[in-house]
Amino acid sequence: MEPLTYRYATEADLPFLDRLADEDGIGAARDNLRPDHAEQALEGLRAINTDPNHALYIVEQHGEPVGSFQLSFLPGVSRRGAWRGQIESVRVLADWRGEGIGEAMMRWAVERCKERGCGIVQLTSDRQRGGAHRFYERLGFVPTHTGFKLTLG
Figure (cartoon, rainbow, N blue to C red):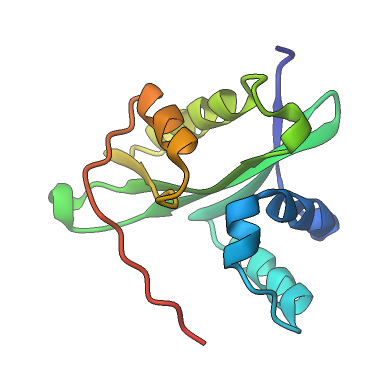
């Protein structure tokens, strides 16, 4: 596989991020678009880009975007004050799945967490994503907790 490049997402990437979300059958069915979706997405991207503890990455191969993920660094007092790396919204274009891109993205994200001094890297994954769970476990992630969500509005 050719080397991937990683860059911060910009406003111009919002259509690509929508495409990734649309290709995600589980997420697309779960996430109801609101009339102000574009405005919300722009507001969210701006918040991420102005906070040094958050980054939304666009992953490219041969100069073309093929995937994306969000990486956040969370302070805390549990685990003796260790920082946590939180990986979210890991997505690869359907045509590029199975090429090792997801694994490369995850390994790159874990390295950023190590560089930042995190004591743990965590992520969540929808219960319906059996293939994703096997993928994360193959990379060394262990399903140690049960997550809970409360949808608002």
